[in-house]
Image (cartoon, rainbow, N blue to C red):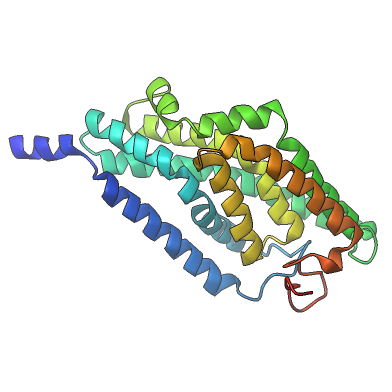
Length: 265
């Protein structure tokens, strides 16, 4: 029908898609708040069974990454509106590919966690070298901020039009491929920042908000590229602080403790 063709050509309403993304982000944060409240055990927090972990990880991905991925999704949906009769479905498939890439990262992290736990290295105990190990991981994440790979991946994430126009693949499989590819670029940009979350306590809602804010600032704000140096210095400083005096770090739950440290400590 001609009217149907006009509706299909009109495509997605950007404001409507933006509202859906905001709603999905808020819903994901609510789920995390309900399911993870009181579960923060600090560095070395048990990740639970694989099935439970994957469910939480996908929810975390939605909560932490959807805001910074929104510009790419909006650009993709706009281009899809002119080349597909089902732009909404293609955008959903693109997002699925993006989540697949981050889920793969989460599974690798889970596998490494299980490997370390199986080795049971006593020196990583919090009363021994645990703070130094956690601090070293965070400092290394800060140093990654200064690498060419970080700069290249961040620039990709900040230029959605370039990616969509030069890496376009039609159809459902094309949308999935593009979503996975963009997700891998995003992993390349942010894997070290997410590693910080594992180092301070992957079940900490407070640290999730902090890391998500850093990712959003880098990828979306006009000064995002210049902020990488600031965040690099902040992460190195945080790593040293945790290694030297973990008990004084705000919002850090020390293993064996009951509550996270407050900023008034």
